[in-house]
Image (tube, rainbow, N blue to C red):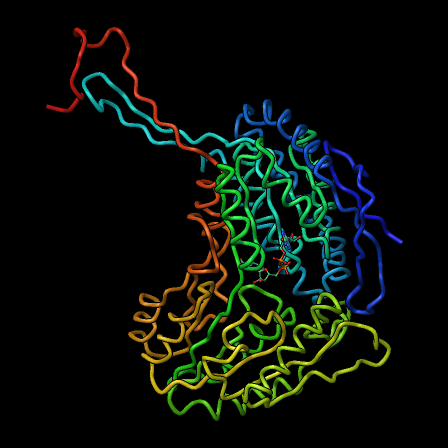
Length: 497
Ligand code: NAD
């Protein structure tokens, strides 16, 4: 059985803790390994190494840092099949989807390769007579990232390539449910020439997260996960004077207007609701059917949900894989029970699905609810599984109000042929990422990713220009050389006359 260790100071590290957590292959339901859960002492040791590494890494010219990133990019491409298989084996999502998520992470590395350009500051000659002023962005020190189970490559790669390109050193605490991909990525980065201690992976649970919050030498924390934990991280990191960005859960709506291309909307919804078994923070879990399109929408969706091909992630025919753990599978099924009790109409029930040869795997079929109401728990809470709720709205204003009144604000999309409707929607939706005829509007690496409301605590989104801002601090320098105008002491605020 595989034993997953930490990666500290350029090598695998056992740590001092005896605590372990089980790792499962969701497609078979069998245990495939164990991960060591770090103690506070292990974390502090990793931070000590990262602090030491910061001294030389932060003073390396950005171009030299970029060259290591270019090598890392090549190694990810070379090892993409192995990395993808690791994701499938511990998360369960289907191979092509896992590969796509790895590519999305790789794109952040590609963006970070441009760090010499991204770190260029601003300069003004003669802010005053013979006085020049310029601003530069400098790294923060040791940064930490705490990541969720659902994107074991992509979400860590939203963080560490940007932080490291900016000159920081990094402690990554991946999800204890699927940690192997982070270890492999750290090994590849080290192989690419990253010095010891610049990227460290410390596995663990709440104990190590609390150690990160308490450690005075960690300057900034990036978190992605559920909203209650995001809030906990945000409040406690701020209390300990750390910079923090904490991305939380979601309940993404898809507004389907009566004038839309229905095939496009239905296909978009199928991928966005059931892809990755709904375990995506940008999954669409609510379809808002506007006007008289509801019956046609539900009819078209139900045929497709019924014929959804559920199977192991490595089977090329599978469109949807298993859920991540048995506990999560039970939680999602329980939400379906709740929806039925609340009076929503369960059009397609995937709870009973069993796969021959994979009876112990964590599978369920897609579920489709109609006539879901806004006071139901299945509407208000994040389910994070293959369950789509259709809510009926009389008109555009009612649909927009649903979107804006919801506590989450990660992503939203609208399907319409009317440009005016699309533009009004994108302007008025209180949501961080909006799609117009695009079901999953995940920004590319050179833009930034983040939600509004209780989907993100903090000021800055992840990767792209916001990533550079988060992982650097601004310094503005004003200078005059002695050959300039000489004057006596000045006791008043200098201003331009
Ligand atoms: P989670 O909140 O359970 O775990 C996230 C991280 O926090 C993990 O590393 C975990 O070890 C740690 N953690 C868990 N409980 C903790 C506790 N009590 N104290 C301290 N640390 C703790 O989330 P998850 O189940 O791994 O991931 C799914 C969630 O992540 C969903 O809510 C999903 O919407 C969200 N998510 C959000 C985004 C986004 O960009 N907004 C992206 C991906 C996932």
